Length: 197
Image (cartoon, rainbow, N blue to C red; front, side, top):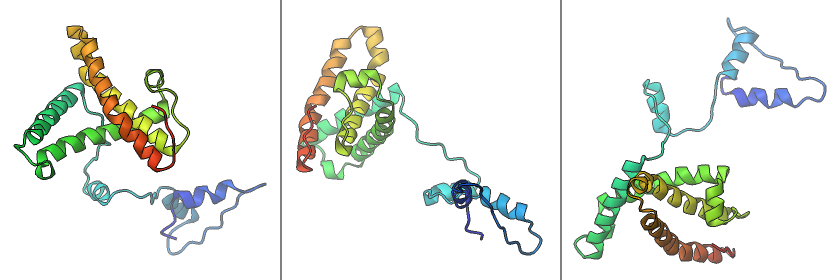
């Protein structure tokens, strides 16, 4: 069948107790080997339509990558300035496309980092935040906190090394944690989960 892909071949061909046998029906000029080869090289895994369109057009889509330290510093500076405009009444937060773009870019980077950090659970993150919780919401919050810490460390690490201003960096991290802790705790409590961060 033309809709058969590698998963439809692999799964049944690895489940037999004593042996696995495939009976392949052919039509036209195709041999059984041609049919199996086509099925084994077909992958119907879901992917976004724009990715498939680019693939058909011969374009290479790069997977999302982490922002560099300089990119993060620039985004943090833009975020601070745009939020100051909102706080001073010179701009409306809901209508500020630049602020939305900056914050969305920062959050996209956070989500990429958080996924990796939840899998790796590096020692520095466990030292700062404690062990990763067992429940899903706690794991998500832990990952976001670790990603924010990693972002700021990555953004300001070279600046700190050159200026010896580690304590200033530490204050920024503590400020972020202080702002996020009540939100994370309240979000968890609303789902009936107690977390201690």
